[in-house]
Image 1 (cartoon, helix red, strand yellow):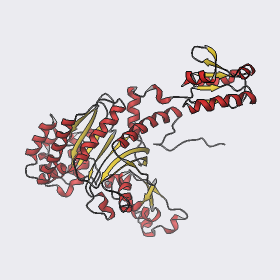
Image 2: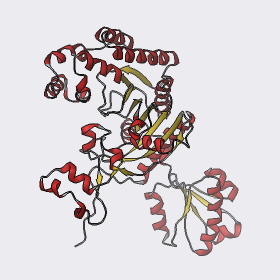
Image 3: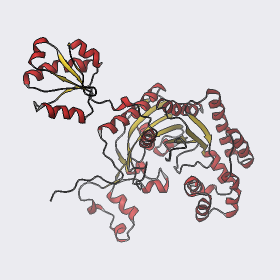
Image 4: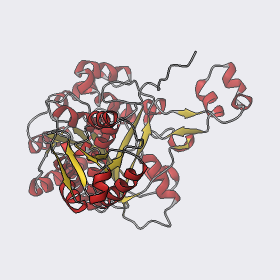
Length: 456
């Protein structure tokens, strides 16, 4: 019995229309990256496990897809780990490589490995798939594309300002209005942890805080307590859970909360600078919003943190994010190289554009004309015209077989091809083409020049 075909959960096949729509988003983002001066690179789909593990926090590490060593991997397995059911040690002995979890850590590895070839500051963009062993749900997949842009070798806050403009430019080009660019600063989170005497539990604190919009205030507090953060410290956080108002008013409130933290005040200063610059420059499709609960549980952010939300009437998780990492390359031995970057979530942006009906009709532009095949002589005559049409960027094709005319016309209808061309002995002798409009049914004899003109 033949095996029923299937694909792994969290992965997808894409039909021609979907690919066309995805390419529309890719091309819009890629074009904006280029306009802003970013250069393209690519890295392998899998890295050494040591490159990836330990860079995303405990939760992130669990979501990394490990690749079994080739050959008899069990022969070299850690026997003690196997006996004691120590999965971490066992995995390390049977898997030395893993699929990339994101594009940022591989980029840091790339920068260090190629540092002598790079001109700093280095602005790169990268559009490639990543893999996460996550639970599949709407807008969340195990295989998906990331579209990243990063700058390394500059500590200037003008980079953060430019990334906010880049987000706005892309969403303006996609006609996606009402997007919210949320921003916070890791220094503020560190300052809050310092004020509540939980500096040693910064990661636990930020991971819990980042879940506020998903699980609510009480559950966040319960998680913090379970991680060893004192009730007294959690009580000091109460003003954060109700912080609201304009960007400027929230900044003022934070100044009083963090008055005893030098690092926290530095974070406030950085956010105020970015806000003032954006207020002066203006945004078209997006709004900049301060969100002090925005934490993003990744270990490497040290300054600004970004997260982009879809318009409020669309139920969707974040469609982009990023932040400043002052020493990410330090994990690979290259110290004091500051970087900042953002990412676009292609798959979620696709779903948002689909839901709002924002894909232009021309995106799925199909074959515009099908030449009916009446035989080899006629086919050769048609191919000369097809060659000329393609030269003029008209999507044209010849039906490959000299099948019954009804079958060929049905094929054109099923593919929504708007025009067909019929060529018989009469057309060959007069060097003309019968052009038929498949919607109206009208047909006319035209010269090659007229054919190109009507279809171009």
